[in-house]
Length: 299
Image (cartoon, rainbow, N blue to C red; front, side, top):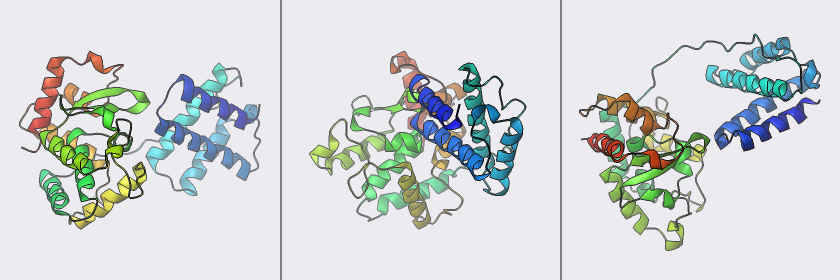
């Protein structure tokens, strides 16, 4: 069997049967493309059964030396190839696991970078006084990220029907289409009402994206990151030190450092690290605990 045919079958499997998130699917698709391209560039056989662990190790070496990829990306590529190889064995495309004995390189564990409370307040102060035409949108976006711990992919895909202002909650569609219900901070609800009142009615339909670009199109994760970098620099903070994902780290760190005793289980649920099949399993007590945690934030 040609490797490209096996790759197509595998991608179909993880998309339909395993129901992986779109981001994971795109990453795995690109990782496998890189591997196939390596085989072509080095005149290697494209027959699936000809692939061996030694070829994979050559691929890893090439990625490190000639492509200078980051350790986390390399670990993901190896993980992708391990899943692909196991799938091929399970479906009898090949008789042996060509990833057997191939280990991911160890990477130095680093503490997540985050903003200090004073830095976050400086950023918020800039957003509140910025006179850019899209300043209100930006203020809502980044305060929402910082007070919920949402992922940027979750924010750009947010639609109006996910917001429940009456109950002060937001329904998040996370990785693997898993859902979690989060409380909204009171300052965010006020901002949302102001933001929504400045939009055309057709842009606030339940299925419409909440945040759009200048071209009235849905934002993507990359453009959101670029906006963040521009604004963080204008606020007087080092843009090279912070990435958009650091708002998520900031949320988690400041909650744990706050006056309210936020247990790790609550924080885990807020960040979406625990799997939830439906939002109905949330009890009133759990939601109230989350509301207290959110309201304690930035006091």
